[in-house]
Length: 310
Length: 264
Image (tube, rainbow over the protein chains, first blue to last red):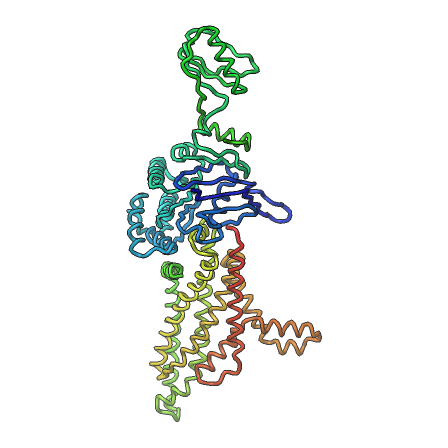
């Protein structure tokens, strides 16, 4: 079941008469299924934060259709079971950490005893139990991120939007936050994760969407996006054989005793490589599309721009 | 609404705004003590020896004094609360509020009415302390003073609505205060609308002045009305009350309309 549905979403910011308009999102369409973790990637200024703000009704769409929990973002019902941690959060600094969670819970219509129970549990979960009664204004950036994550989860949401949740957190803290995210995922909650950290997204996300200059460049599962159509791993008894490829077909990236890795201009050229090996009576054990890192896929997507994905 | 009210009260306590009001209250109580001293000095020469007679003599004076006292309290309440809305709508903080399952109108009106209730309660509390002491010292105790407080509640609502609209439009506390000052100046000028009309040769100017007079709130005249009600005199015109209420309602509606269309 789709919990988030985005159809031809365009957002244009008007920046004044002289400067013209800025297209932050350009005909973006995709969806998020219930219970999945979607990682949203993109370079700075790609439109990631704008997209999340449109989904939450914080910013309005210029054109296009958006449904969250089956409601338009303008309808408060769309945010009924939704948690959000914004990028560079700033919370009411007169409140303590516990006070912030209480305010967030009250605004979500929770009763006092439930707020107390969830707040105590979440403060421990994000490692803020010791500073629960310290005012937010005294928190470091990392502590603010942690309390922000707790307030996003206080109403036990089904859908959580996290915009750079590990920003400003030390490496140990990042691992802890990642564990919290895994826990949320294991509880069956839907997570919409904006992050610059590709490794983080690769570890947690079921699917990844890559935005580039406001357009959706790629969307698919991590394995789909990291599979290269032109890179093949060939396991074979190559031994000391010298194998060459015609220049126009591609190149052999690596040769080793037990096989080789080739980059081909077209996927069908793999047959030529197989023929060459068989002509030399070399045993072939397997031919598999090689995986590339998410970072490489990301850079490709950002450089090449949108392409049809399966 | 309850969540926003409790948050506003919490912010009021945290920022120690009550200390400012405690200081003003103490200064006013010193004023009460001083008037007692003056009254004691005058009493032997006065024909009226009973405290009741003195009380009756002082009653209109007390009502007028409390009208001014309320203006002072409200002035400080407006100054102290002008930054609350712009602060809540700062980048990084607005997202926290706007991501909650509340409509924009609920959020804005909830915040403005919370400011009105929380700061209004502080103003009322401070005024009641001063009145209580004055009542004991001068032997003047009349529940009609509550009518004066009620009229000033409308006055405060006008200022909260103006500061709220300016806060949403500008996102700045200083602009919000400037707007309040501008309104005060405009309505002060409009209180001379009859004189200006007589001086103006153009009928257009006369008509514009007349229209503006009816459109703008009349907080000065609300003060006169409050005194009349407190001393039991008939009220000449209820126009200042209902035009001020309508103005506050229009400002809040406009603020909610603008807020609903803003991107954060």
